[in-house]
Length: 255
Length: 353
Image 1: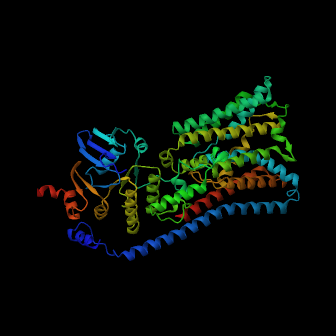
Image 2: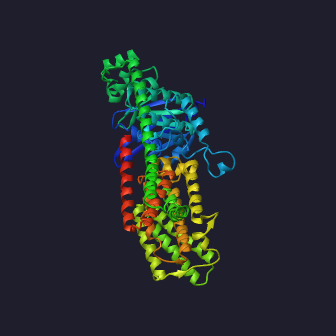
Image 3: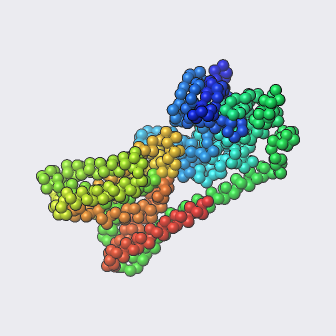
């Protein structure tokens, strides 16, 4: 967890082109354990292409991906998930008719001890208390873990999806615009949640247009411009003005 | 935070929010949580009302029948009614699970007919009756597997797939039997359809057994969670490591097996095999499932609802027979109940938003 010499996730010289159009050119990118890295850039800068490449939804045309020093190549998001990379999308993959606890444990239900467990009987109490513990450890407020997910707000659902990813031991969390559709109060809660996730030694990649939030939360910010990494800014070494000028490309012209 | 805001506003990077007062935000947050809680309570009440509405309908039809026929509340009449409706009930249990998984199987009537005819054919060629029964159930499983493969792996709408297999199995049953019936007796086969234990018909035990297993699976097991998740959000199910395809495939097979078993029961009851035995069950089962509150869009449904719906259909069926109404009249009433149930379901869904 505290081994900072080997990055959790590393992209080396990642290039993605569609025909003659290069969407990403020579991206180098590292993410360490317990680190929040912001990924910012204007529309069309290549943020979502990079996210999709990192999680295996797209295959890079060139370059390598490493997880904890091991080279990997993903042919689908399923494979990246198996290696501990979880993407929490805006429109989350939660089953609306199932409860919070059932969603968190979906596919990994706890079973009763003994014969009843053998025939597949779930241990609802254990699942509930475990779900409550996870949600509490992340300071996520919901009315009850028995609430159906379809009844909750966007922010709460997002939080449940993040909690699930954490509970399943994901090492890398990719948050693609997690707060874009949320109310201010909810957006702040998600920000708090991300900070809590970091405490657990998970590496977080935060793709966001919310620059104040990125400035406040991220240890490092990677700025993309026209498919290239133009700069990497470290916490406390830049202002939001700087960030804006890097995103628009104005900083390049100044030099 | 404040100087950050100022620098932002100065840089023109963001519009100044009209109200950034933290107390205000907090208040808003508390308010929204409160509203959500209230909404949740309302939605919960609505869903319970839907179930209780079904129980109320049952009480009403029982009262009507009780008032209109002196024979209705007779113990023997009720047992007969239960015995008749149990055959439908067995299939309604597995069909409910299938509908929760967002699929449907309307080939069950054809499967019943096919099973009956296969048993008759084998018995008339001197095969032992129980061996014939097992072989006919294998035929039912094969039909279920075909339903599953075409629907799940070739991604054809299950309504279309099973309409096709319904036609095929019915046709096959008539071709094999040549519309003639075969006498089937002996080796205790009659127990399936007309046996009694402690003066309660055997079919009732079968139905109760199947229902208990189905309800247990749906409510208390991992498989149950996975069935609901499959019907609710296939992508979520798939991402969670559940194999929704396997679940749907399995449900088609189990449903077909239940239809086959129902076919055997009817064959035993009639003491003969016949290709038209599935006809009255064709729509009754689907009616029971939908009346019971299972939603055709998947993810929603309870076996307690299906049980109530089966009971309602049983009472209506029996009462109409006692009152010597024609069976067409019965179709009319079940049709009305079905449409009413769907309308109530729609209403509840809309109110939830």
